[in-house]
Image (tube, rainbow, N blue to C red; front, side, top):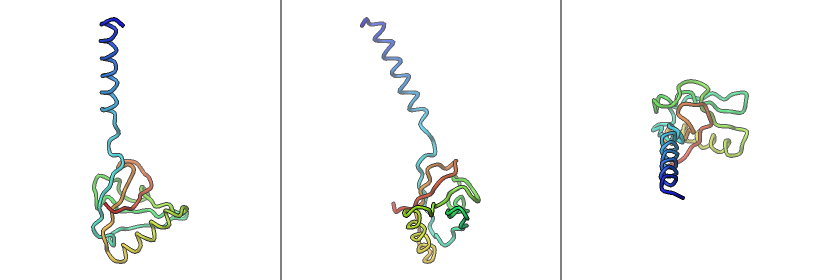
Length: 113
């Protein structure tokens, strides 16, 4: 391989890597804390989902009211999360909430960080 071809290949690879780094999705895989889960508002839908209605009151970067984030009750994991959340709501404990995107609707997950 001559020097010109090698130099061009190097620049193309650097450009590709820079493009990948710059196009990384923003607002992906996001955790935030709800200090007092008794303040959460929710609606149980006819579609086996519990919609958390006011997450934006705890973190202004996530979508606001009403049907943007949910727990899927059609799965065993979703039912377990819902039971955990109800217990935390009853006692006013903190809860960490995970959303896959701050700017798109989707399933939420609970966790401890």
